[in-house]
Image (cartoon, rainbow, N blue to C red; front, side, top):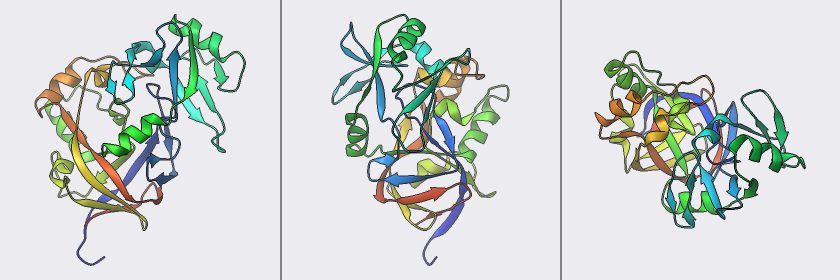
Amino acid sequence: MENSVVVGRVSSIWHYPVMGLQGEQLNSVAVLDLGVKGDRRYALYDKKAQGVIDATKWNYDWGETTAVPNMLELQAHIMPDFSSVLLTLPDGTKVASNDPRLGSVLSDFLSREVTMIELPDIMNDKAKRGRAIHLITTSSLSELRRSYPLGNFDPRRFRPNIVIETIDDIVGFAEESWVSKTIQIGEEVMLRIEKPTDRCVMTTMRQGEISYDSRILETLAQNHSILGVLCRVTSPGIIQVADTARLL
């Protein structure tokens, strides 16, 4: 394509149907104006505290979340018709969002009375602030591994929507130099890169087979606690793994 530079290809795609829970890897997905379809559609609500819970405390325009770190041990899978979510506990127990047992199963695991709610404000807030899509590159992950070879820099620690496998001659924290530029992914989707992503203690936390490691955040501090970029969707469409990524 004229006046564009190929920077890599899509190596993985992710969405997180329930805020604060593990997400799922996808082969392809629709990217909407508000972000990846199905992303952060649901949240867990603490009935006693009368507020949304997350793996870490965070302030949003619509309110502040309560930190419940062990919720990150739960995995969420959205049904193909997007009508419900299937949650998996560490012991393999599965419960659907439309199952009457959902509240009791979650409450027993999290040791607080919770329920699941739909919360469109999550993605509306992210899109309004130019945070509809979170993108990271393999060159950034490689740079972190060079600083801390024993660290597990699995992309899941950083909760991206899109991971770009960069071409060989791109090294370091490449995506930070793309801020204010547009990246095209595949034939349809265009993202304006708005800002670098600040990192927090959530990157150190245990999830699935990924163990707790405080040195992850210490390593990120060498790059001002930044990894990846946040993007605004300027042209929606479908993306899939192996799609070419071009900087316009």
